[in-house]
Length: 145
Image (cartoon, rainbow, N blue to C red; front, side, top):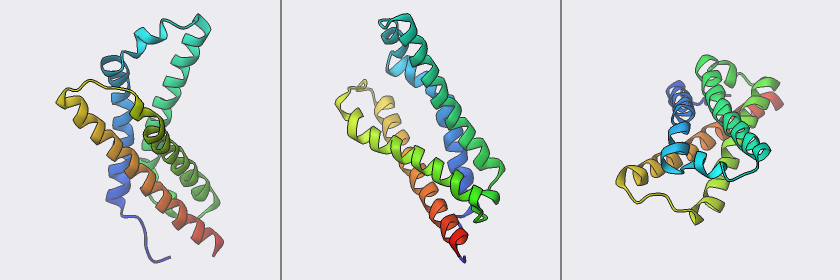
């Protein structure tokens, strides 16, 4: 296995994932007015929505932290590296597919900051997906060799 994903790219992706976790509450509150919308749900559904929101935020942060702390281990071609990079690749690829298949029908405010943020976030999501797909393929090739 000659080629490796450059460490700087993994570090950049890791920091980006942590950033998405940290910015997530702002996006929910300020852009999507999410908290007011879930108040219209039944109490149990409100809690389910909040719980899933926290799961998403926690996964984004955790995937970033794991990537930041275990760069070499995420590329060592072991079964665990295959499984973990495959999981993260599937997570972000699913996010990208969902983002482009379902979210365009929703309107976000037309302010420049929000439009720029949308482009930035979509670029990050696609980048995460591509980086982890590449790492998964790299690890899978090493594991099967």
